[in-house]
Image (cartoon, rainbow, N blue to C red; front, side, top):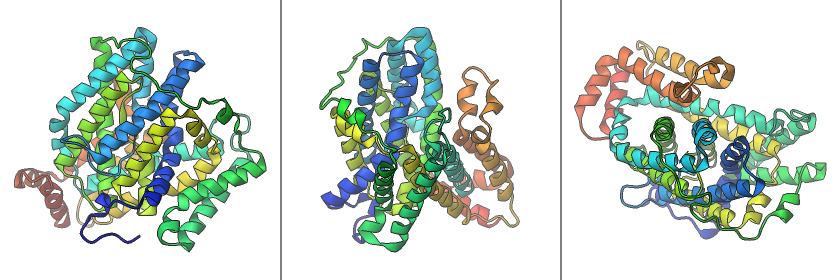
Length: 457
């Protein structure tokens, strides 16, 4: 794709046809994850079917609004990067705990309060950018890509590990066929068609699934044509100190993951994130989370699944992701549209996910390739931080005995990788880190200075 020389690819406004098609591609990739949070929470709290539908529609609507805030931005809200927003999985466990002990209205109250607190501490948290030199960023992006693979594997097997047909040869063959089609389109075609390789792979995979009898369109007929979830559909939110503190701890983990996602997208798009960018991204997360609590939804952050799609398609325009936000709003208002998109079989999603999530890992490896290892301790930093980061994914039972708020932190591989890499970098590259921290107040300067320090060992 050709880009204007006067406009950065992130800020390029593409023709309407490309905005719609590329935006739809993003929605198809993240849809399954987008509706998972209300489904899991609703099931855990024993909500009726009609209440579950309300949560899903509200989630899609607010996800679209949150994406518009993050991509288009206004004042100091929004990173103005191609970051698609969805409900964070980090918040599921604390919300279930709060909901079972206090009720759903207290969940929404805690979400609103935690969103407001996130906006308040955004300037402070954004200053942590100085702790993210290339060796930390590369390790973090690599772990982000690797940590997504279990989701791809679950989709590839059929979507439900407890189902009798999970991992059936038909599911695996369908996923393999989708991978082959996606790679063929990406390698054989360039420009507009090549950039749509994931969308074409999803559509062709779905068509193949129809011939194999793997699709079910009954939900499309059952879904309503139009439905608007009003604010406070479950009653006025209730506020309590303990639930708010628990939710705020979840938001701290979400902010750490947002840091990783913003840095990853900044590297992939060629528009590195500054301290200001991070602060604006945190404020957008906080505002979106507040809106979520008001409109029967939950905490928001950038969806990591879509990072690989940007790397693979090389379509870096934030307006494409804004178009995806508009599509999600329409899905929230017109449930039949959402039901139609939900008919894409999970093995088809899994096939495309393997390619895209792998591209996220490659982005991390590319960042690490710029780091000097010989004669430095950077190899040790990468080895330990990546290893610690994949522990929750490789063996979830490892931390099952951890209880209370600490469980939120140890179950997030991205958080563990970030903390480990930052601490090891401070301990093993002390001189370079202190020099970078004091060299300049320019947000872009610390990363550059630390990179130069690493180059000199």
